[in-house]
Image (cartoon, rainbow, N blue to C red; front, side, top):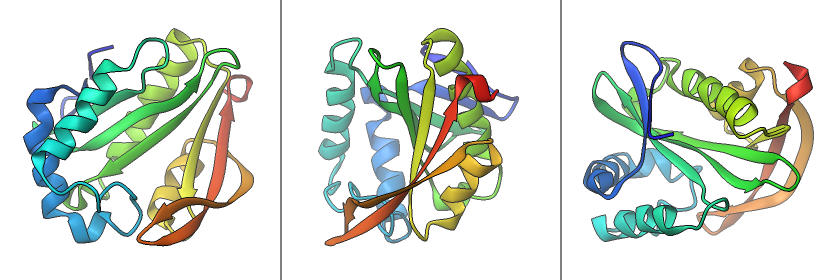
Amino acid sequence: MNHIQISTRLRIEAVNLSMADVIFQTIHRDREYLCKWLPFIDSTKQVSDTEDFIQNVIEQPNPMRDEVFAIWYDEEFAGLIGLKDTDYTNRKTEIGYWLAENMQGKGIITQCARTLIRYAFQKLKMNRIQIKVATGNEKSKAIPLRLGFQYEGIERQGERCNNQYFDLQVFSLIKKDL
């Protein structure tokens, strides 16, 4: 999947190297806001770090490749969303996302995640999708709840960010739940 028009204002597009500068500039501009919950922010110091990330995504062999999409809202870069740690043997994947500070509160991630859920269940034949959210990140936690995911529990100290460990709340959606 290269490009999906979700609405007249919103689309997602598979990341490519030509997007590295706009992605990096957004991270750089919103660094203070994003670094509270995202462990990769501190190590993203220059455009080449973002280029390396995109190159690694592109070069991953199928079917192990994470599917990472740039989110465009009114033709402005808004953030990233994707499927990660996909396990084709057990038919499960995880949705990860981040959004620029000025794009919050528009329903962007909910709409994009809903699209990826359909894609994962219908096209990739997944049975399980999970979303992990750092405890305390209430805006992010609202997404899986809004989409009908079930709370499963805590992955204790599941993510290291800013030299501390966060517990992760695990939410899942099973194909039969729909």
